[in-house]
Image 1 (cartoon, rainbow, N blue to C red):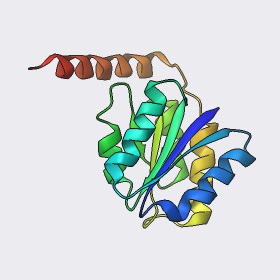
Image 2 (image 1 turned 30 degrees about the horizontal axis):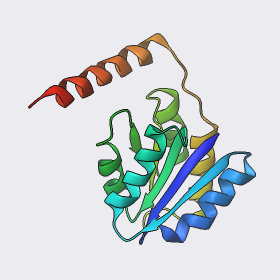
Image 3 (image 1 turned 120 degrees about the vertical axis):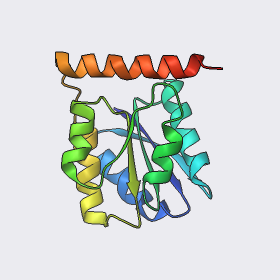
Image 4 (image 1 turned 45 degrees about the vertical axis):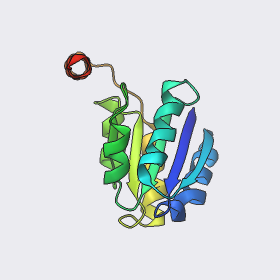
Length: 148
C-alpha cells in the first residue's frame, strides 16, 4: 500500500522510524518531507490522498492533535490520533480511517513502530453497521460543505 508520510518540526524525530517501519512491512512510504507548521504537513497528506498518490497517510506533529484537526478539513479524510495499537487498527476496521496522526512528544519510538504497523496492516471490515455509520458521516460532510 502507498502511504504518504509527513512531519512538522516537532514530528521529524519519528520520520526515519515511520518510513522504515512501513518499508519493512512491505508498504511503499511516500515521504512528503517536513514543514515548520502542522497545517502545511496535514495539507500535503490530504492532497496526496485526494489526488490518489497514496491510499493512506501518517502525519506527525508534537501531539497528533494539530495535524488531526487540519487533515480533517479535507473532504473524504478520516483522521484519528492513535497512540496505542487498538485505536490504530480499530479506526481502520470500524471507521475506515485513512490518516493516522501521531504525537512525537507523546509516544516513544518502540510504541510508535507498533502503532504504525497496526494501522498499516488493518483493513476496513465492511460490516453493515460500520457502513451505515460512515454513510451518516458522509451526509454530515456533504451538508456542511453545502452551507453558505
